[in-house]
Image 1 (cartoon, rainbow, N blue to C red):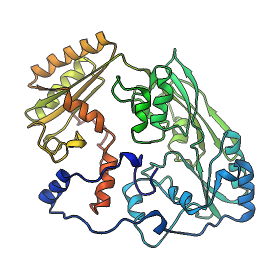
Image 2 (image 1 turned 30 degrees about the horizontal axis):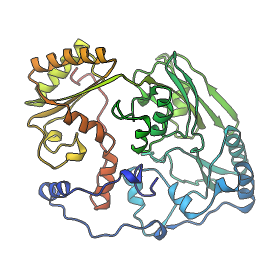
Image 3 (image 1 turned 90 degrees about the vertical axis):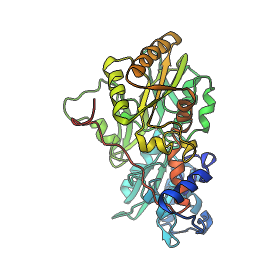
Image 4 (image 1 turned 180 degrees about the vertical axis):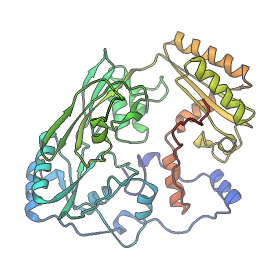
Length: 409
């Protein structure tokens, strides 16, 4: 983890010449000559944790896992939103937690919360450090001190129900780690796994993001649960059916960003690693034609695992394939991506039916390479954001609005 950038430092790349050229041509932006701060140049506020509290917390987790050094505090000084990373450029004094605690088990978590509740110390749970909503800000407020509760040691696969397709993982497991742990048993989350021919360990080179229990782990999730801790003791939410009837207290816990408790385990829907994966990219003359084609596929139910359509602007600068941004345009009009996973026979039959529909609605096949390029770069956008920030171009991630009554079906 890098103190002033997203994810895996090994995955970070400087801006390519094609992107630099695009920025100059489209926006008139020149390269910045402002040097980045080194970690040892950052000035942090002094730790406000008293010796007695340090000794008590170190007795719970062990001296090696109660850390007050500036390096550890800086790594836990906030999330990875654009505003967070802009604050990292501040040459003044920056706020940071007063200590970083790394509990080893749920008893440690309960003991930490009990002590901090009694002593007026704020606790900020820390998973992968990729929060973009301010959930990791070390705000003391009315408290005497604030500590970061790093869950990285909760990194086990506790259980796998192969019949139901549900895995129970420690809340400190990263997405790539989850793929590796599940891959040993022939299962996958389906998020970080690369092409089906790659070994599970290959996912370890993908962006390091902590698994969070939320609906994004699978829109088709029908049941899941979580076990958490709060200052009063343990609370568990066992597996049960999802329901739209009334409030869901699990969602309240999950969405609280650690305010109501610490999630220590998660149950997630998992899938067997597919036998076959088929990629195909398509070109449509315009967005309206592409939208009509995708609507036909959706309404017919031919079932691509992935189908996405870029508009003319995104297609024009290759934003869907981040490794080719600013280079020669892949296609005119609009680019569409399709991916099919499953048994060989099932993937091939769905691919054939979808192909027929897309051709009938004005699509032209571009082969598999653009779709594979999208797959390779699907998690690269935050790294591109970081490179733009390093070059002093301010950007903000955009999230599309939810589907509403006026959205095309």
